[in-house]
Amino acid sequence: MRKKIALFFAVVFFTSLHAAENPLLTLRPGHPRLLITSFEVWAELAKLKATDPRFAMVAAQIDKDARALLKKPPVEYQKTGRRLLTVSRAVLKRTLLLATAYRLDPDAAFLRRAETELLAAAAFADWNPTHFLDTAEMTAALAIGYDWLYDGLSPEARAKIRHAIASKGLRPALDEKAKINSWQRAEHNWNQVCFGGLTLGALAIAEDEPELAAKILLLAKAGIVYGLKPYAPDGVYPEGPGYWSFGTSYQVLMIAALKSALGTDWGLPEAPGFYASARAYLEMVGPSGLAFNYSDGSAETSLEPALFWFAQQVNDPGLVCMERRFFEVVSKRGKTGELGETNRCYPLTALWWPSVGAFDGNSSLPLCWQGRGANPIGVFRSSWTELGALYLAFKGGSAGLNHAHMDAGTFVFEADGVRWAQDLGAQDYESLESKKIDLWNKKQESQRWRVFRLNNYSHNTLTIDGQLHRVAGSAEFVAFRAERDTAFGVLDMSSVFAGQATSVKRGFRMLEGRSVLIQDEIVGAKPGTSVRWAMVTGAEVAVDGTHATLREKGRELFAELLGTTKATFSVISADPPANGYDAQNMGKRILIATVPVGADGAVRLAVWLKPQSASTQPVPDLIVLKDWAVESAKVSTGN
Image 1 (tube, one colour):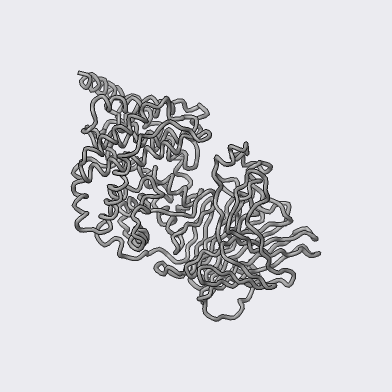
Image 2 (cartoon, rainbow, N blue to C red):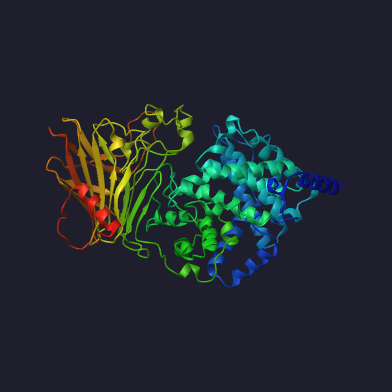
């Protein structure tokens, strides 16, 4: 009877709306409808275990991780500072593991354990809407569990889960003017994660809560355009590769769920730069498998489900061929647990598994690449297949962006299997918030910029007169040439140093013979001050005047100062001064060169980085960086 009543009100609500205003007009009846439309999909996937060793590896890990959960109690409501996020993510990971394991191998123990987990989360007093990411990820978790396990859940369990999705997930988002919902017009990952989670929740319970579901979907359709803006024009996610994974995973979940449940994706994938972002992400991962971890991102990468989806959508197996490194590492170490250690969504790789042979190809992506946008990126590499390939990635951008650091002009550098130039990465948010650091205030005088890992003193960039970069400034490319062995890029960083110098340009050049040159030109600095060049490294460093030798993993990198006779190399610890809130950086040090500014206010210096494997080559000539810009213009115009 209850179902008949719900169906009646659904019909009444559907017909009361004009077709163009009714997002549920094409709602697929029954379950499953989120990401898949038939449980037969899982039966076909299960057959792959016998024919595809890599899929068998993933399936075995899912089964192993799911069985480990059978012995664990369900999650409890426990906030860390102002966040419930760790708990929400645990529920999502557990739900995906248990539901996927159950569909690949129908063991009732998985079903019952998943139901217990879902009911425990449904019983929470709230899902912490004051930090809405927590609410969104929890909503996504319960929506997927409800939909994928619908036929196995008890009627009572379905009712409780459905009620929780509606009352604790969807309804808190309806007040657009509430402070907790400022993410609805945000141009960063919060927008995508929150609308993605809410869309899954609305589609999961739409037949029982049609009015609420329609309101959420209309809200999402109007608001998600803000979250998609940062991908333009080339797919460079301003918050870095790690946050690309976070925001884009939920964007993919939203698009895939709309398509499976409504038969439409609202045209969202056609947003400028969105499809290109998968390639941009791969460009920002070095041969070591470490990402260019600018802003608050992590250098660690994991098996990335979103890439599997992109590969299907654009019919480009090259997007997943680089993922084979995870399987190779697992095979060598015999530790399958590494597949799922870092990405809570890794079971989704099974759902979007590529055709046979996809992992055996090679990337068709360019070796030298420029990505534009709010945080413009340049990448030079010598090979996509050599583990010891040369890799240089560098960036412009602004400290005023979401999650940004004062890292304009920074770079990472790899050669011979070692990441020589590193980024220390972000410090745990709660470790700073608990010390009352005003972490999210990006004003020039904010406490945020006292944090060592966030300011320019800890990054591979320039510092003038010991001062901080200007938050309002932005470094932009004024030249870029993407031809291997003669590739170069020039950043105009002048506005980042407003009030400290009139002109600051930084150039990066890839030299024939597997070495690189980083060249800086400063004009209009205050005489008597100094310019500091810096590179963070985990290697042991020996310095001798204008030469430095870095050693790690039995390999060597040689650094040589060019363009100035006023500076020599030195090495300092990467640990910040003791202040009670900065994290230590054990095992890291900073290679620096400090150049005094003369009476003319001009400084010109360059650092030549030569890996041990580089061929013998003459000292590179330095040219005026503006001449590089002229040369770049000739290349771009064909003159």
